[in-house]
Amino acid sequence: MSTTFFGVSFDAADAARAARFWAAVLDRKVADGADEHDAVVEAGDPAGGPRLAFHQVSEAKSVKNRFHPDLITGDYEGESERLLALGATKLHEVVRGGARWTTFADVEGNEFDLIAG
Image (cartoon, rainbow, N blue to C red; front, side):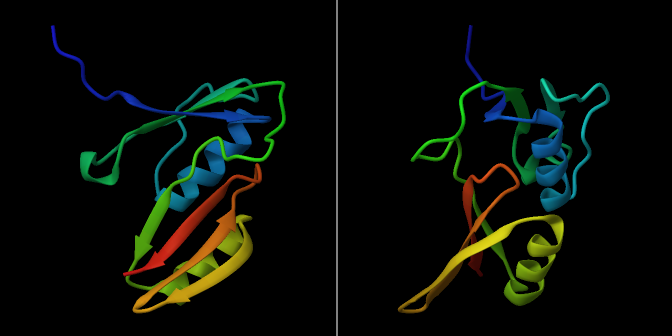
């Protein structure tokens, strides 16, 4: 028997809200039956990454992220504006050598980076 990667799970205060945010960011759909307890964003195109599952937990995020994705885009300014319109919060921007990225927080306060690529 072999083991294969099935997906990534996020802890969330409101699973459906977090799933809707990430589905919009990744241009995917939230699977039917999503509620505040459990929600799934299906993988769709395998090149776009794994399925994402969100599960309600009673503990609030503290100090470290529950998950920290790094996203890359060829339209850094446009994508930054789109993420803000979806409900992300800009935390800070870094320019180091030839690299540039912005750290955002999602609707649950989890940080993620958008890299200029």
